[in-house]
Length: 174
Image (tube, rainbow, N blue to C red; front, side, top):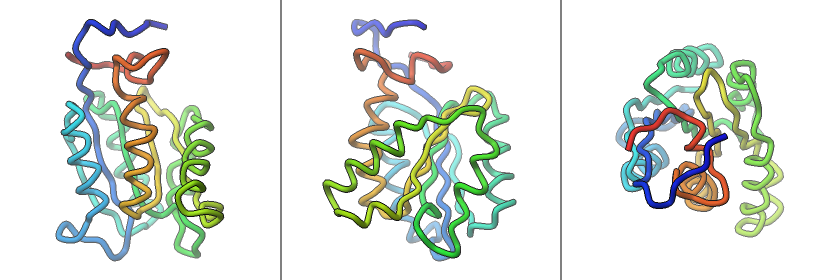
């Protein structure tokens, strides 16, 4: 495992952002907009973006294509993780993962509990890795995306963050 050198500039990673919703469009995808803009503001690149209505196989196709693309290091999804009969994100994505990052969902629900109380119980936020690509799946609300990005993901994808971060384990360019 390599350690980040705090004297080096932060590495820039390539991201893809998927919004999973049957009501969001390019015109009203505030969570996808927030995530894409936040990726850029943090010095990374958003190289792919899409919206899926939640069809299990359509989600898998998009994610499979992105996971197979060696130029994408991180995938952020939002939506489809709440308690609903339409919930499809975990069922679509978890079979694609090679490993699970259990701490992401646990930490997200803890931070969310501090913000919204027991309603966080209904969140199935999760993360993992597949084919050298990190995948973070969070609820669709912009507030939940802000919690996940600002309190967990941004810092863990900063190659200068100490004592450890995910960025140093993935292909990155300065």
